[in-house]
Length: 368
Length: 150
Image (cartoon, rainbow over all chains, first blue to last red; front, side, top):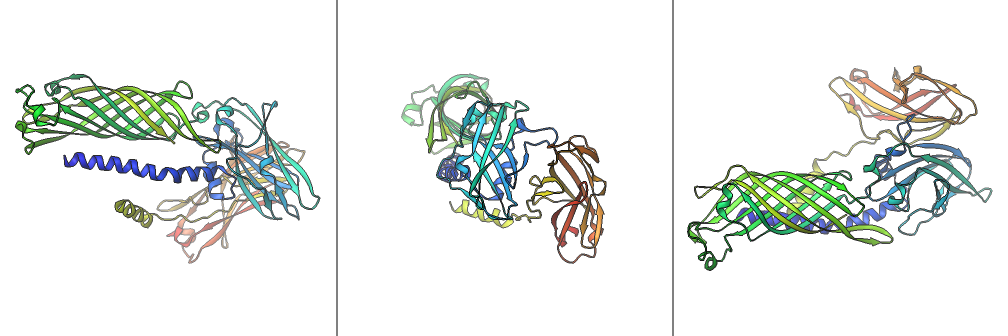
């Protein structure tokens, strides 16, 4: 029970921390989505340049322009939620220039004008003579972006000397189709599963079926399809209940009640059928704890710890997206599937309890 | 929460903040436009004998004629010492190539410095990486610490 409590504490602590961190993450996302002049963030975004738009001459999406008296570089980059135009401008004029960020225009496939998807108020950027500035401009929709093959970018630059606005323009052409890069997805998901047994195979059958199972997992996705995470499950009330009065009513051949907990690490593969419907498959390896009551005596408990394997196959449906300031912040998910546990070697109270357990699960969860 | 705070302090104390070595430059020179934004500003690889720097720049020909770039004379200067470096075009791995009007090309420079080069170095140096253009050389500074040569 001590192990179980420790695991529950760790699980709930992790959950609490994520909840605690969530507003910060949301704030950071909001901040990162606004125009900024921090080179560090700019450089970090360049690490996620869209390879779908790269040219073989440079292996990057970079476009260099010398127009309106300034030097400019453009890149396309993206994260799991948004794509960005990265814009660096060095002012070589003898006077100040002003970049009108909110008037930057994207022309998709030469027929559709779009303006940036800013989440908050954006001011113009002043650049003094001889100085440079880098900014990142969010495209209005990542889902729309994946259908676009050509983008013309127009950046209005106001010259303080002539008091006129000049347009710097460049264009990008799609060179590849990397579906992982095009996909909009949550990078962190927390899922709570509950269900019931549908099968037991091997010596574990001697234990009878659990009345129910609760499971929890948190996954961190490296891209749209591949992730790693931690999975925890607890099957309890084997033979009925922890209540000794109920236990007494059960078959005397099995004179104990038990609960099985599993905690492990898992790899998760995720495949999107549509933007809102996807399946996940997560094979994992971890530790299994069995605790039982010996001779129906609640003060006489015996436990066993062993390695075990798990695999979880779930069909997930994103039924709601929480949005703030016209931005997708959080996904709410439901779904169903199965979880399979296999413990190759377990012995409790001198009894072999190895074997396979199969449970059906319903789930609710959310992702960022 | 205490354990979490302790872990954060532990990580903060044991994590070495990297040195920033490279400054962003977006420059026009000799009818070319350069950017060194892809250079990792903090990464410096070292082994027991050598220091390795990957320096990647993109260059665009702004003139209305084809231009020839010969990277044979690319160098890095550390104090009074000038060491040749190996640069080539990103696409075709050529040291000498022609750049059509408005064409953009990536240039990969692999810099290897023997630690012996800095054996007498007692302070930091702002080394200068020079990439030859048609008539002049594009210059980029790169900070080398005295301890890099230890």
